[in-house]
Image 1 (cartoon, helix red, strand yellow):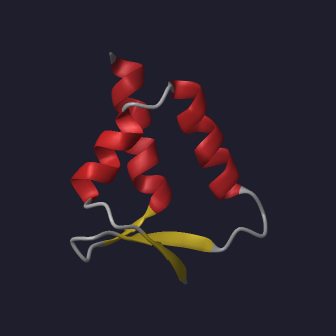
Image 2 (cartoon, one colour; image 1 turned 180 degrees about the horizontal axis):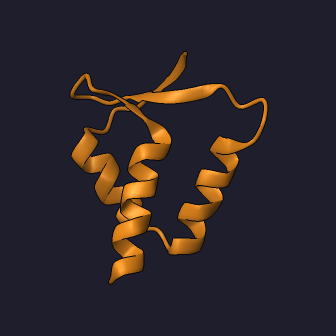
Amino acid sequence: MAVDMTDETTAQYRQRISKMSIEDIQKAIDYLDQPGYNCEGLVTADEVIVPRTKILHEVLREKQQD
């Protein structure tokens, strides 16, 4: 599995995503889910490897519940 790297911690990444609109989060999910995009993971500054779409989906659910 290929991964992207960020200098943000998991909490900072989640916080940045939570500031995005629901439409922008959905666009990001759609982009990551398109065929040919093979960078499924994200390595954060706190050395955690997470599926990118997992955080996006979690934040999207939280925003939709508000």
